Figure 1: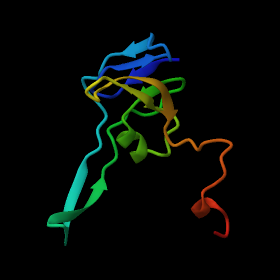
Figure 2 (figure 1 turned 135 degrees about the horizontal axis):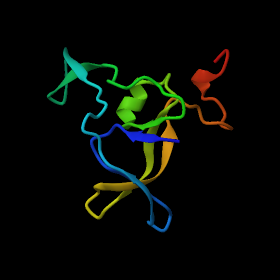
Figure 3 (figure 1 turned 180 degrees about the horizontal axis):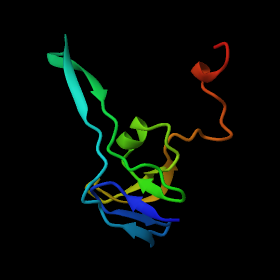
Figure 4 (figure 1 turned 120 degrees about the horizontal axis):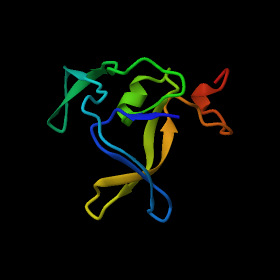
Length: 124
């Protein structure tokens, strides 16, 4: 299946021995979510508090058999999409910079086999 990277960064997937499994170059036209921030008129410890509303990302239409790599922010903005891959199990260098991932999370997909959280249970 084709995989298209819609992040501005190269995405490298490694195995448990840090061997590269696959690498996708960064996109020249990455999917982005914009944030609109509005002051709420309150402060905490002298820091102003803001309300934030995020926009939808500029994603291509779903295509049969095509997966799209996106950031977690973009994936969260589109829970209805089942074709979005978010890098997971991130690998970092000594300075904490992400250098690779070991897996992808399918955006919007519930975890199978887990008990529903209290707020998800009927009658909770």
